[in-house]
Length: 258
Image (cartoon, rainbow, N blue to C red; front, top):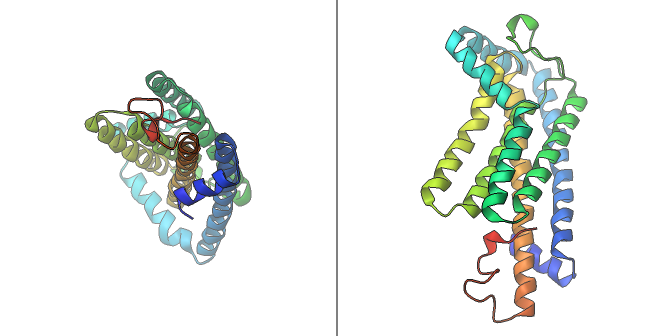
């Protein structure tokens, strides 16, 4: 079912747009949780076939061999930026900036929904796998003891980056600003993931899972918002078949907010 078809179905069922948004988010969160569980099953199957020795250990050894004082400082900074304090702080900064620019609730709804969902997926993944982190002799501080799979730093950073990029696309008026934000948001999760392997805090497959699950969940939130926009557009069109007047509040769908 496409976004317009889902929007038409919600409108015919007379489901309010904001209820549609949260129903879609709840359904997609369940799908993402199932996908996380499936990823765990795949990981266990790979690990049972000596997958760790074939993938994770060589990558970790290569990261250890590549260590140097300058790179270590960069990796520690990236890890701090994507940690328990850094990610929420960056999320608040993005929320304030986009809310100030847009004057609506879209950034608040998208960022809170995305980051709370990513936190749930991180906790679920870690509790299901309870995977041991790389040996302490390969780690650099700050040391961590929580389960290794998936990489929470990578997953949460990916979700934040995708949502910030989406907000930039539907908010920024200048093409250069949009593409600069997209480029930065594409590089940031990858750099954070590399820093986690570099510091010996995660196996490479932990980071890969964080990137994939985070991207899937963030895209789910974006999809829910697009369905909400379509529902609102059809509701307004049903009331006023002539459509929104030029320059009016509904003149462009991308600025409509949940």
